[in-house]
Length: 307
Image (cartoon, rainbow, N blue to C red; front, side, top):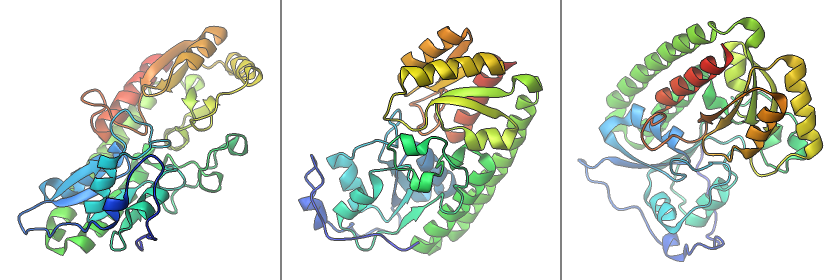
């Protein structure tokens, strides 16, 4: 993908003038390749492919919502020194394009990993004020089979920047794609232990459509289509009625969102509430310190609540 660049405006609240004249330092043959990612999830993908040939900085750290993250001076410096940068795209990171433009790196390759893969629409998008591209759901990575395309795009981009590491990147990509196949089979086997009438989920953030489509679950409803806007009391009451009408057994929220709305919804509907899922950000340490650990944790929590 072509690099994105422009002149260097000032980003509100962040001094970037010095960054505009920074050039990445010359890389010695023994030094790892400096890589920047928009999120910790994507950072894990890059580490799996690159191993010790890369050093990865995720701009939005663990526990931070990648939708609404705001760059800091330190994260801007990391981007200014990177040799390649990866982001999810499809409108997920509202701050990404402006941040890259502000750094002023004309030579920085930026790779949109979800390009062409975001094919599920986000219901209610026109009411949220959120800028998911063309109303498409960007949470592609919650389908491990689609992540395999992310991994191939990461491999290709690393090889372009570091051809000498081609064999390492190929080995890393192949090994991780096998691990994703294993994960896919493990998830499917566990979801199949849920009685079919109970394979319905309601979530706080509408992030699990690709996951549900892959594994035969139904997204019965959600509190917000995207972070940043609370629902009306009328919408919450209607969702509670739908939960009762559809016989939904549990409702789910991610650990990095305030659970109060979902807890109130669960109380009104008389169902179990689980507030320990992860999607856009890994955790610092267990239970979700890698993508595969995150997915296994989420599935374990879902199956326990729905079975």
